Image 1 (spheres, rainbow, N blue to C red):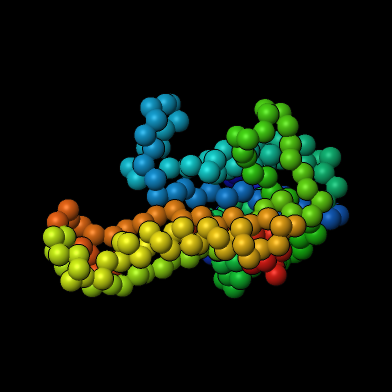
Image 2: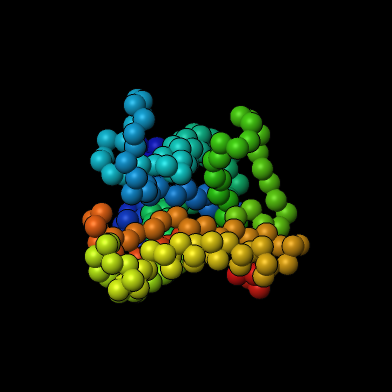
Length: 227
């Protein structure tokens, strides 16, 4: 952004970056998330991640690219700009509360400093709509996302003697099915909610019953009362 003659602030909230174009009038903030996920990219393509175990599986690399292009275009026509623009590149969107850390960083108060932000805009890609279309909502665009993790503790032993054990994997299997009834039998049908079990970890070998089994996932809701 420095090449575009844009004022740049780095290391905000640890790794955040903010660019500023100053002018007279209201101030708009454009935001993009830039973190990756701990996923190994298996596809062979020219855009495959160059870092093992890290992948832009949610399209955040595209978000960063779009915001950089927006900064380039706005900078080119800054003489027509009636106001200010802040370009916010946010880390730790995937459950790390990166925006909060950037906002509350007392050492780098650029987000809260003059020009004060009047409106914030962000965009997220998705492959479920047609190319060229946009999804807009008057009420909710994104849901609350809450992660959970449950550890079931039993009594391990040899797989040939399950009667001497308390098998946490059996209990976990029952629990996974029971969790699915929370939405279908406890949430009013006028609301939307999704509860997903996204991992199960239990045992290390084929001939032993483990002491513990762990599951985890996410809960997605819109209304605070449903959450």
